[in-house]
Length: 387
Ligand code: FDA
Image (cartoon, rainbow, N blue to C red):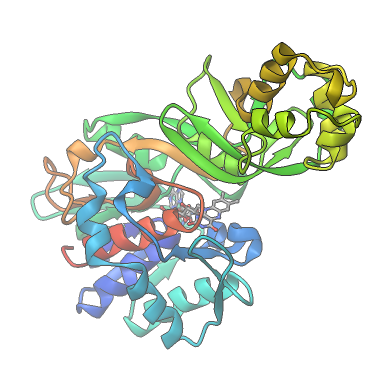
């Protein structure tokens, strides 16, 4: 069977690329290994798919080449995707910080992509395993569990390694290796972190508080959430993209206050430190904090030295993490096919004509908040207009 374009992977990037290429009159087939397409979209955003972020900018992405994403992001913007959502009458809302979610369910996004594919006469084959890929003079030959396919352009949209339970595979990375392409070492990202020394914090599991998390030059003001082994919550997921093993993350537990000034303002108070902190932080956290860092006593009995020490612990709590919670808890993969190998305009492999990589398999990773889907749409659109 012959097609102009074969796309491996029926996720966010693959389906969108298929529909857009189909609209250009290209004959397109999507080969999906799972029994249905778009499984990650379905579970995304807690079932409501945070499908884009209105503030998307290149600075929200991490890559060995921070300039690579600029061209694609400029040519397909959040507004372009919103227009598509509105065309399909999908209701959405901004949750916070420019993050757009479906009001109803993520299913609407998958349905929209399937409808767009149908309208563009795209063929979709599920339960399809690709056994081998060979380059020939005019394109590629694919041997699959269904049949043999030939295509001029081959798009790899098999996603990253995170969440293996919904079908993540290393197919894209292995294919890149088969063609001798450089790969930036993959690692779990947007992922909870595990304390080096638990210090009994596990008993706080479920407690959340708003902080500013800082690593090197990067800050995120969001919530952290205690888990049985470490920390999660948006602030930690965001900082996990920057965290380096062996180095501490700093948390400002009172992001609106200089803790030293606050303690000095209440210097004449007879209130116990633990109660004072309990009015500003979750009580159980305040108890634990005092047990570990500042045995409670009335504020008017704190020495200057104690005030300094407590203030530093509150405004810059240094926490060491021993590892991440790994692929099964990571939302995305950092690293992937090196952007040095790809054209930033079309996503085509510079050394292999007709071969394209799009979406998460490429070394471009977005922050939490709809940025990863925006990259999937934008990189797919770039390839769709070239295949
Ligand atoms: P995606 O993973 O969507 O698709 C890859 C497809 O390829 C899958 O259908 C897979 O089955 C298929 N495949 C894999 N190997 C194959 C093979 N060998 N042969 C054929 N097919 C194969 N992002 C965001 O912006 N907002 C959000 O709300 C969320 N929420 C979220 C929640 C959770 C729990 C996770 C795990 C991830 C998110 N993300 C997110 C990230 C987002 O889901 C992700 O970045 C995009 O889905 C990436 O799109 P891709 O198309 O590149 O991969």
